Image (cartoon, rainbow, N blue to C red; front, side, top):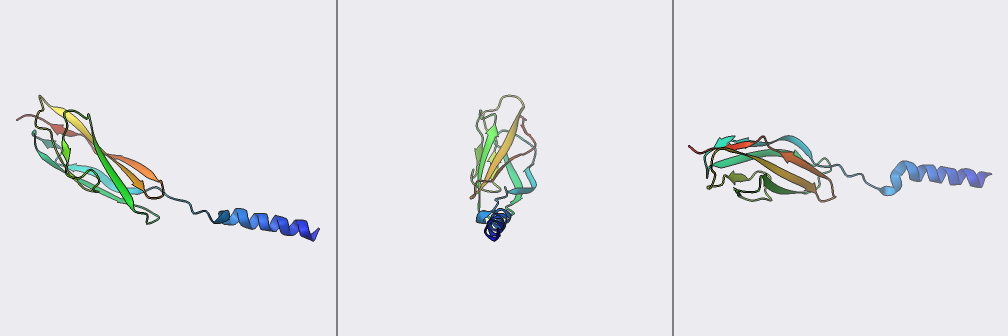
Length: 123
């Protein structure tokens, strides 16, 4: 009988301790992304502010995109936490762009951030 109780105790200890597994938490967005300014002329530059931390202290990778993809604007660095975005030159009429960032930590956690739309309009 003592043998089976010690087996149950060992199973409870392993279950409680989680077999040494560490739970990964995804990055946590504190602010943003925030574009400044929110309205520009073709070729205008927008600064993106983005505050994010990883609760586990993991390194993070950033990947910025724009929607719609065409006409294409240009990010200063698509892998930067806070890049600038230059509006496309060949815009006809006003057009709204969504600037998004996909943040992944090195342990596989991720989050998608979308800035309020940026309006590009001809003068």
